[in-house]
Length: 491
Ligand code: BG6
Image (cartoon, rainbow, N blue to C red):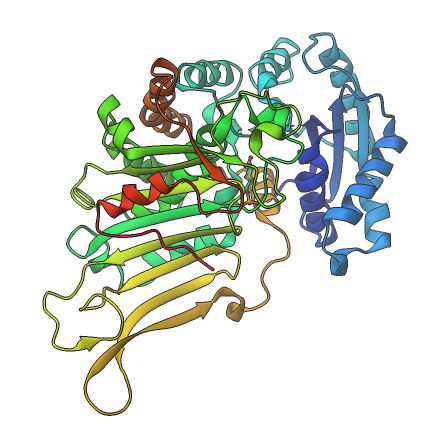
């Protein structure tokens, strides 16, 4: 970890900064895990000065940091590291001002020009900021380092992602670019790697010979809240699927990396995306179900949300079947789904193993022989559940499904800092392992882009309504029913 650093946050008066970045930074600060000489320079159009900025961040910390982590002395000390520059990041002139402010701060904290730029802005600015940084020479490394962190969605489709990569690589080297996906910062997502590669029992079974199909679910019980303006131009495919669900797919399906480092891990992620069987129009019609929530039982419909057009066709739900064309997974369907306004908030992966070839016993209320399944719960109640068949005590020989349940909390106190803290710390330390490399962005988009194109070119392609608070359109049930299965709906 460097001794000194200035973190520049573009979009410093926005929601992401208040809700996620500042609480994460505060927790790192409090735990002594930030560089000793540290400053934040927030930049945004809102006309704050340092004091007003600090007051607004303080309010945010009080709302978004867990009460047992609130420590007034630590908050005050943390706030004194924060500075603010009121300027429009889309204007080239703002960057001369930025440079001057950075030099002033460098002098105060004795920083040898180590800068980490964090883009917490609307996606429209993702292509603009690196160009302006370059024009002002703020990308050039001399005695200090320069790194840039950019939020998702990285690109709107394949061609804009290619263009963004071009812009970033024109101003920075790949090792300086940190494309963030906070799902990879989650302890339990990283634990999938430990489960798979720190144990020998699963690996021999982790393939087409023993696995029947895989479900990946990341659903939420909230609507889009006040984010209508952003969300309506994006939709679930760009907001959740192309990034978060694709990461979950990658860690579930990847080969063991040669080494757990930035190239070993990320090479395997790319191979997963490159193995995705491309979807034809016919596949998209049959294997992708999109939906939009409708008003139900006191919950608003999507089209009634603030800043959402009354006839919007933006999807808030997506379920799809995909396959990987490789030796490990050939023929094994992966069902993924995500949606807003579902009955609960849960992210989990369910590995369905093939049944034993023949049943010697009777099974209570279920298919016999009982198929084993492994549930990897990412959130909440983080843990792992292995379903086994066990003899029912007493007369006869009847088999019951029993869950062997491991709760992640048993490993000790769950880390209080969230995914953002972990990832910010990695950027500061210069470790890009858990960030998305340019080739992963491109190979991911190559797979998902035809779906967006198809929806655009075939406007009659259905967008199914589903009642807010339900498990999504019934058509998604038919998707897995073809497999003779049903979705595992967690309670
Ligand atoms: C964000 C999406 O990236 O992830 C949101 O933009 C979504 O729409 C959120 O709600 C879900 O993340 P988490 O960590 O709360 O599951």
